[in-house]
Image (tube, rainbow, N blue to C red; front, top):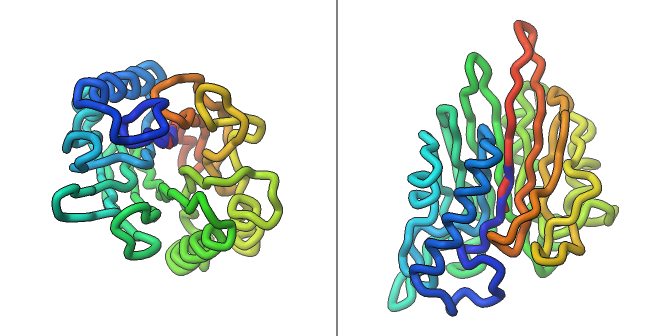
Length: 263
């Protein structure tokens, strides 16, 4: 599952209007969605560890406590100190052991910086790699630069020998149809090594109260057989969560799991 949880503010457009009780109520809505659909892995975007605008609540810990998931990793790519501190980024929540995790901010801004994190998860006897990203919302050119840095990472560690290509999930801040934007360009530029498909293909995820654009995707490489993909109707964030069901075929056995990306 991929879910941009909008810092726990729900459908509101402005972060500063919420007290701690309303933040916790929104987090309970998010936890309810996760409990209902029970994804093996959740990838969050816009999730705070300790920020003034959501009363220094550790959002990941709160959701983890409410869902009883055993494993988690927080990838911070925004940190600001001082009178109004901020500390937020992406995160993983998992039923299965997270063997390793690395975080890569795209830049050095203290507010509004995007980034990605990569985790290796052990599911039974199989290890899978997942990249959880959040791309820039303002500029197509910036998004292209950001996917280039992700592709460089993938080519260096995965695609050069076509072993264990990672799932890619998150908030792309662009649709899938624009040839010159991030989703299509990622698939085109990685195609010489491995073929990716995007999911869901005909769903809108933003804004949640009246979705008009698909911004949130899971990109699955060729070893993965996607069985189903959909956006989940909800009002816990300004984005809808995206859930995919897939099978991964290995030489020894077929591993079936469900990955949900929440943005």
